[in-house]
Amino acid sequence: MPGVAPEREGGYSLVEAIAALTIFGFAIVVAAGFLDAHMSAARRLEARADLVRAAETLLEGVRGGMTPMTSGAVDLGDEFEPFTAIRVRTAVFVTERPLPGLYELRVEARAMVRTEEMVVSITTQVWRP
Image (cartoon, rainbow, N blue to C red; front, side, top):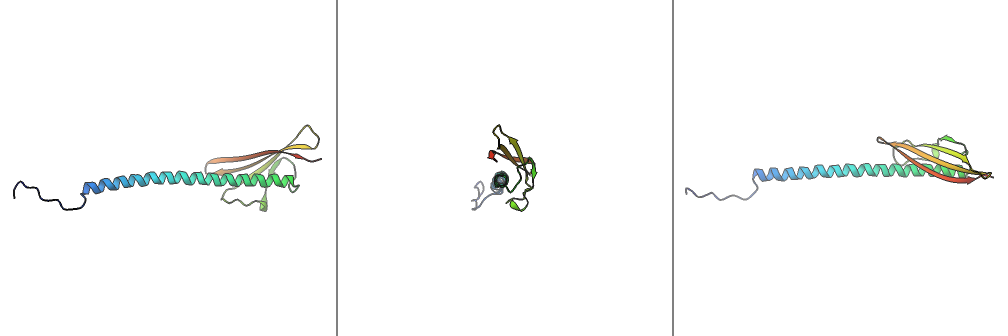
């Protein structure tokens, strides 16, 4: 009949489908950004945990007499194996205190994580009469 609109069949129009796909694509892009930020933060936390373990390993080596109590870079060798794929550099800095036999030790562990240099430093005192 003229002037009567035909009945619409069930389903979605092309415009509705394109709008839904656009919204879904935008949501995927936002989620990927959050995932990348989360993975980067997780990598930094794992690297920091490795640096703390390396510094503690070196400090206990000096306290226990296995590592000489002299200032300078120290290679931990087989004593320390990082969980992550970072190259850890360690060093000890020794300062004599006013009391004879008392020394201040500062232990540093350093590594490059992506483009950021991370440093963990532990300072304590050691008595060597």
